[in-house]
Length: 593
Image (tube, rainbow, N blue to C red; front, side):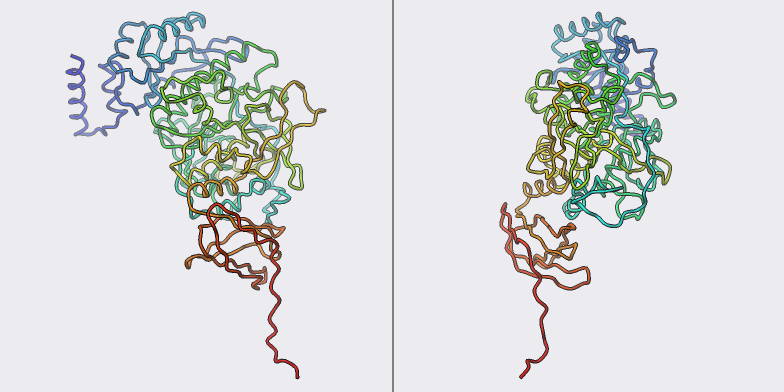
């Protein structure tokens, strides 16, 4: 009988489609679910119910954490049939509201408004239905962007000269991660989409020409431009070589964006995990590989507030289930999330209290998919702390940045210059919100070298100590409010070394390095093809190139040839040319008698 109903629905929908309907999985599932009760397509999403959730649906547990009354998440088992799920909803008082099938996720209205009874009901569903892998209440928090918006600074003007050894002013953060050298490999970069889940984006800004798209019409319609969202997007992908403003980490960025704040007309006080869930689902479903989340909850967490911390822990369990479900259905990605900007007084706390993905540990990681391990989940999460410029190539932890073993890597996050709105507005902002997109940009570059990399490979390359040339030292003891935290050294993310590592893993290449003074570029000629590599101000250079014979040439600022040499590049090996001494000028005058 079920299949007869389904056939009838499909026939009716196809008939409509022949007239004026586009037959997408979403459209079909919307029609099918009206009678069948549940969707049947594994890629469809129905999230219209999100617009109806407001602060009135949230009950506070503590002053800073809460839950959505009468709402639950249900993750279906990977072997569950649509018929089995439909039967559950027929037998139970829970009413299906929407779904995100890339994660096998259903959102339902349940008859219980207290948290205790809602938890009991979720446990009952999980224990008594084989089609249910995991059910949970929907939590809510006072999530905020992880930046310090009250500390803007004016631009100092355009900077002409680069100095990676002593980063300074507007582009210090690009110098600190050796972005110029990474851009030398532009010819190897393939198009990879980057996901940005943030506060809203300006389509008119001069740095975002045709760079920003949305996963669907609903997300496009609810987008509202915001300083924070524009700043984050700009750090990742502001236009290169347009002689305006600044440049992002990724020159050819393809940004897929979602405004994560829950209401398009009024900025609500509570932010639910359900909005984050569907934002991530939409981005991953749209093809985003590296997903940036510059948000968190630690700013509202009081030291010693065990209630808030328990709910954050429970929320992290749910988010690990989301990752496992997406991985199990063939989607691969990494999530780069800010470590958080301390408590309400900007005093660093443990990064695990920033919530969402930062709190997922080996102890609470929860997989609902066979073949997806806890480590697989952890390998898709990069937690980023913020570094400040200490001068002369030294970096220290920013005074507001959360700490602890949950942090994967550090990135520049203080006094970052990027777009904030309008068509041509820029400003300096600080925060771990600014550090996370730097790492997201590097992840995008790494993945663009080889789109076949797994998320685990991308994280390993970025966070490998061998692919960093600087250390971010912790706060001095005198500046530590909470003495019992883990204050440790973090590696500074390095775009150049990460891209080089990706190239060495993907192609037959070797490395060439050396020192030559008086020029800023080295030219390598192989098989008639010329490639230009950057020389930093102290005269040092280091690059990877295909194996084989080549000619390397350096030309002075005045256009004089400093040296040229034939070299042989071997796979996986480093050719060290040492300090190259320019050849003496030739004297063509006749010999004296």
